[in-house]
Image (cartoon, rainbow, N blue to C red; front, side, top):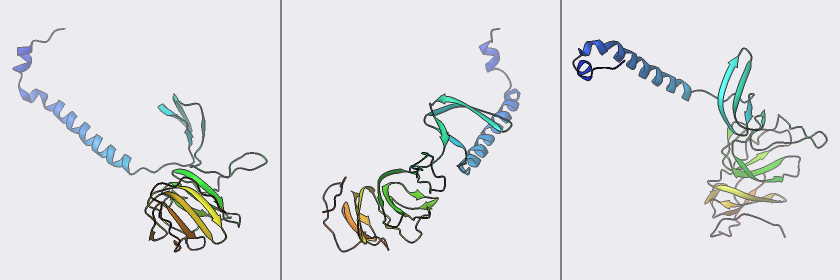
Length: 203
């Protein structure tokens, strides 16, 4: 079937009104859908993949997925505690939302972690945090580094941090700092490195 261009051009615009209503409805739906999608939260109990998901189909209580992935498993965040006998991960370990670059024990069954994350266990923690022996985030320890922490080293009551930051523990510090392991405050030690620090060793 061929359309006559002149006939199309000469048609009364009123014949297009239903199409305009449909178009307006589609635009309105898109705006509402976009607004509602921005308010959604992540279902952390759902499994995740190590690649792109290209199709999803829900059927009753089953979700079928297809795409470019080779592994499907529980969402763990960027750090996990593993059982030394079975290798199973501990789901109680708080989830970290970004890269962990360094981990050191706190000497009491817990850990200090550093990296490029902004949340631990759903609580804001910028790039350095303390996870206690009971697998909960230390609510009072918050050095709040303003850049990536690449290295950590602990010695007694002091935690040394190296990375790419200009402020940590409430003080201006260039790429390297010493933190009080109890309070998270920066100590007076201030070597002021003029470049990123990727490793630390205690002597």
